[in-house]
Amino acid sequence: ADQAREHGQLWENHSAEMAGSRDWRFSLSGELDAAMAAEHIWVAFQPKLDIAAGRITAAEALVRWTHPERGDIFPDSFIPHLEKNGRMLDLTLYVLDRVMEQARRWSLAGNPINVAVNVSAPLLVMDAFVGAMRERLDGGTLLPSLLTLEITESASMEDPERALAGMRLFAEMGIRLSIDDYGTGQSTLSYLKHFPASEIKIDKSFVLAIRDNRNDQAMVRSTIDLAHELGFAVVAEGVEDAAVLEYLRALGCDYAQGWHIGRPIPAKDFAKLAGIGIVS
Ligand code: C2E
Ligand code: CA
Ligand code: CA
Ligand code: CA
Image (cartoon, rainbow, N blue to C red; front, side):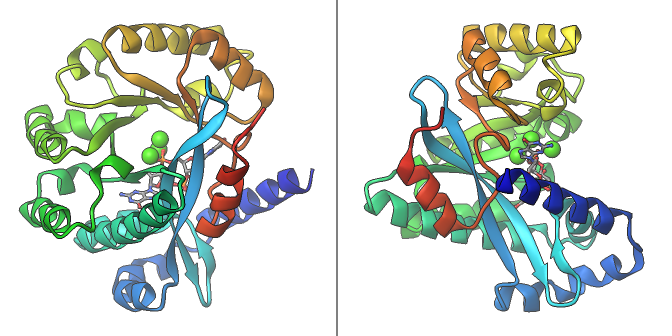
C-alpha cells in the first residue's frame, strides 16, 4: 500500500510538472552540462521480469533529472528540448556510460543484468554516435552482452532503410536491439522482421486496460503469436497488477515490465530487488 501511495505521489507530481508553466523548460538544454557534471541527471532502473523463470533478469534505464529548484523532472519534459538543441548525443552517452558501469558491477557480483538504453532514431545513424560506441567497445567499457538498445517503432519507420542500416552496425557489434512502443506505429511485424532486432515491446497503451478491452486482448495475443513465429522475444510494458501478469503468462509472453514488477528506481534499490529474485 505504501508503494502504491508512492506511485500515486510520483505520478501526481509528474502531471503537475507537465501541466506547469512551459517557459523554464526552454533553458534546460543550456543547463545540461552542469547538471551532468553535478550528477543531477541520473539513471533509474526499471526491472524486467522473465515471466517463465519468475526472475528479474533485465532492466530498462530511464533518465531522471533532479533539478535543484524544480525538483524531479521527467524525460518527456526535457528530451524534446534536448533533441531540438542537438544535445541527445551527449545525454545518451552519459546514460550509456553509467549503465555499463553499473551492469559490469552487477555482473562481477554474479548477477548479469541486461540493461536497455533508449536511443532516439536520429542518433542511430549518426557517425559520432556509432564512432563513440565502437570506441567504447574496443576500449572494453561497452559490454555488448549486457546491453540492449531500444528504438521506437514509429521513429524507425520514418526512414526504415536508414534505421535498418544503423541497426545492422549495432547488431554486428553484438548488441541486442529492441523495437519499443510496438503497435503505436503503422507497421506490421512481418515488415519489421527485416530488422536485426531480438525483441519487441508491446506499448503500454495496449496492456493497461487489457482486462476490459477485447480489441487490446486481440492485439496483444496476435502480436505475441506472430512475434514468436518470427523469432522475436516479447516484452509487455505497463503491467500494473497481478491479474494482467497472469493473463500475459497464459499467452506465453516472455517478459513483463511495469509497476506490479517494480518502478524505475536507483541502482542500489534495484540491486536489492533483483537479488531477491522471485516475484509472484
Ligand atoms: P518508454 O521508453 O516507453 O519508457 C516507459 C515509460 O513508461 C517510462 O516513463 C516508465 O516510467 C513508464 N512506466 C513504466 N511502468 C509503467 C506502468 O506500469 N504504468 C504506467 N502508466 N507507466 C509505466 P518515463 O520514465 O517518464 O519515460 C518516458 C519516455 O522518455 C520513455 O518512454 C522514453 O521514450 C524516454 N526516455 C527515458 N529515458 C530516456 C533516455 O535515456 N534516452 C532517450 N532517448 N529517451 C528516454
Ligand atoms: Ca523504452
Ligand atoms: Ca516503451
Ligand atoms: Ca514510450
